[in-house]
Length: 437
Image 1 (tube, rainbow, N blue to C red):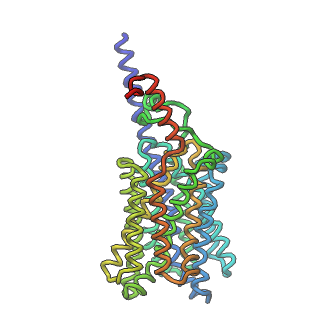
Image 2 (image 1 turned 90 degrees about the horizontal axis):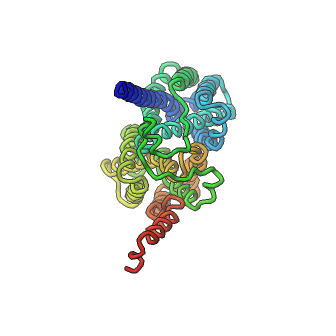
């Protein structure tokens, strides 16, 4: 009788475990769909010239729209965690998808730059950032034993959405013009994000030991339990500011390159416009590859080692672009390296924040660190305008990468030194002979 009960209990536990694993991968699928819809905003450069031609606007004025989008995206992450607490994750993502889609649909009716900045810039960026950080943080909570890999899958889907919609939006602009393309783009994005939200379930971080999680069948591996930091507690640590500085540098180097890669090919490498334009697609491909490969690698070799390596490669690549006479091969190799490292950096950082400050308040804590993305998006162009050109800007980026590399090599999780000293003290108390030696 006992054997039968034990067998039934074992079968029940096995069924529960497989059910949880299946549900986790359905959540991965839903998050991928959502992130692909969100990533489509990185096709904005396709609209600059067509909108300028249609309305007689200056191309640089139209291009400001995407700077506003990027800033609003980063700014929204400060509020996303609080909104998630009030509305719940599914409702928040669904609402963000509807607002993002409507922002693009309404953009099809604008005839002034001010309205374009408001709708396609601020509204779209704010909605995008809200869904981006909450869906990413939630997925990491479901896979605490594979933070790097799962972050790579999620952020990689964001990059894939950008790559695929480069062709979708190009076709739409060619077929119906930029204004109508906004409408169809908005409808597609609205459907993608709202559909994906139905597969997502909100993760709950329990104040239990890792062993209890394994027993419950969540697949979490035993690990050291760290303190779950609130935002206020995180901001009292020096590590938060060090991570912000490293992330700012990583984002500035990648975002500056993405914005001017075609111009570098033409002006510094002497390529024709068509050949240099191919670098845009290559950036998207290597950016996405870096997200997946370096995200998975960080689970195996350590996250800060991956960040340090990426910063070193980026510094060498930007110095090469600045100081070495460029040809086709050198130009594309440097661009590919920077894009690959940038993709890896922004993938690994959500996992680092979770490692350092806990999973419970991940959306809020990462939202603070993520402001480095917004400031990084503006800093490269500002420095270039202030100092006058590509060469000096690349040198500044290389110096910042060197400083950030040193910080990446020195930084440890907050309180880890204190825990090490405590452990050593206990060891000495238990083994007095070690003190004598």
